[in-house]
Image 1 (cartoon, rainbow, N blue to C red):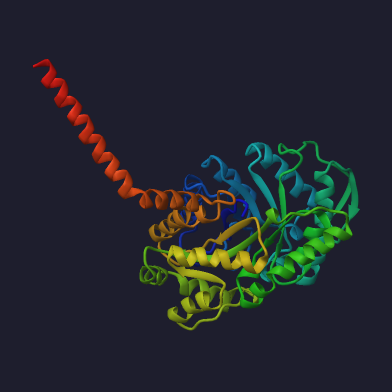
Image 2 (cartoon, rainbow, N blue to C red):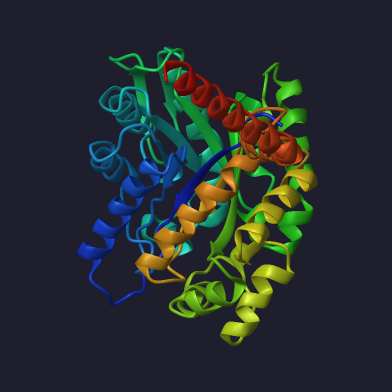
Length: 392
């Protein structure tokens, strides 16, 4: 197995009615915490309505987070490019690429909340059509072309970027996939990465994982593009603790609010979740195969299941949530870094396997080595006594 990257997908999800200022600071502190734990990526969402996912500009958040971190890569997860002038999307990302010294990534999508697009007079079909048009323009601009184009929302006349990206040849670009084939088609057409969000958040989506990448490869072949599973990122749900019972107790803090948001507020049927009480909610996450609430062993098994179902991918992104209080949430990320990462990193012999093998070899030879150690002590003692006797 090649090195599996780990990261988060931060919408974020905060309960409506709480202090947004402190919630945003908590998000920034989380990204800094993950950087210290050696997480590879953090993707930041864009939303404008519904009162829960409160980051309106992932680019501004990334600029703030970049100053608080050292190595973690920071992506827009996603920029709803159907809402924006594609020229300015490309310009902002190139600026961030320079400001972060190449730690930025562009995630593209049509926008997930209908209450966002409605304020712009766009319906869900229009946003998906604009995704294709605007992504094509953005990629042409990023590759140095001069673009003249008219979409239903913007007109470009001899548009071009006045800066080249800091990254050579270009920072990572990925397209979001929830339920429709729109995302995989665009990823393959442009030879960019895929962010499978809904594919791991419902039983039907889990079953469609391998199909998702098949669409990417088919479109890439048709357009003469090269794609790699290293650029495929899956988004999944986890919360772990030292024991399964502790994990279940932890999530009682906020899992119901998260479920109710998708059940009653967000008009986002692809993210429909079941569960009437907390026990049913936990059972839905664990039994439907879409996540893991439990121990690090449960988390490892979930990553392996996704790997087997998909045929392999490049990054496991944990959907950031506040099911547990901040302290338990940070501890969950620590446990995953300490006990899950090593089983999926290190090459053909993972970091976990290498140290476990070393332990087994030492244990197997312990009696022989112990006897040799005792004999060495006895030998050196005899030599010393002989030296003392000779001097006397």
